[in-house]
Image (cartoon, one colour):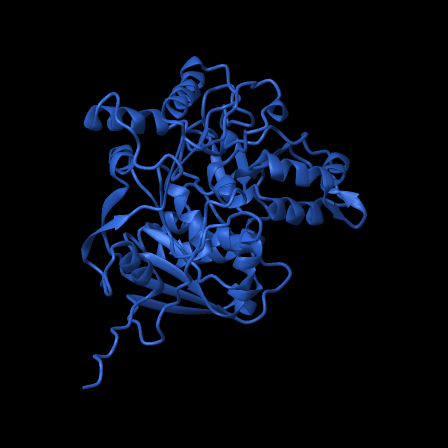
Length: 424
């Protein structure tokens, strides 16, 4: 007798099936999966550690000291004593548990004096080789979906779930249905992945993908760098998505060379897999867009907003503070002068270094920004993307209008509830 036909699955269904040691899963199934990496940071880390100790015991050991990655990045360069204490709690726990991947910072006066400090967790995860195709990554941060750019299942979880993972290495997950967004055509020079994801969120709304996988596909994916793919997946959460994902390819393998030596498995959606929703865009018909206040789905064409007075510009975050984001900014600013305060916050130390060394038409990015009148690049961290303590760099402390490369523009997101944020 011929073997039964294999049931078709989407990319993420395959990743979750592998993690559950099953041959087949379908949307709606509740499954236990093995976790490859758990990430936490200074805001949720102490809470996660508290849950872990309460539930597993004060002297319990973590499930695997090499699969937990701890990255201080949110409230770092501040005099706020509680924020500083959070980083101390992470350090005490990592020493006690002998956690291998702890990217510590002790000297806040000069980030460069901290060889282990990286900066924004989602970019650090990728740069340090913790994001691999076919794996399952959970993080106590909603933008953990960033790592889906590597063809893996990556999503944000709360402190309780994270405390459970810390002790067991497992989590109960409901398999999400997949919505596929195909971008076909040749990527125009004036478009960025940020325009693609803002367009998508604007079209389906901030609840348009609730608890579903957003798979990005089509000709354009091959044309995107890993950093641009990260931008796409990073904002899946802003449409309510459980996660975002792009199938791994040569670009992915090239990026991972020298960053990780762990073997990984590449999955693709079957051609006859069933998708909850299927949408095709022609990239050549799209143009640069923004999300107007106060929601990531408040879509408008950038050119429709040319008469809106802005008070400042913020370039940074896991979404818009990567090296290629600064290259894009430099290409616009070269030979120009800024007319409002322009804040630059590289996501990580590596991005900070790139800003000093990468050249556009013979000038380094740092030189271009200086000549244009930007404020000098700040220490790498999340900084004002999510407000933070009052003394946070570039925080909106009054009713200002800010054009920002970040991911959320709800009232109060960057500080003052009277502020207005345009995502671009």
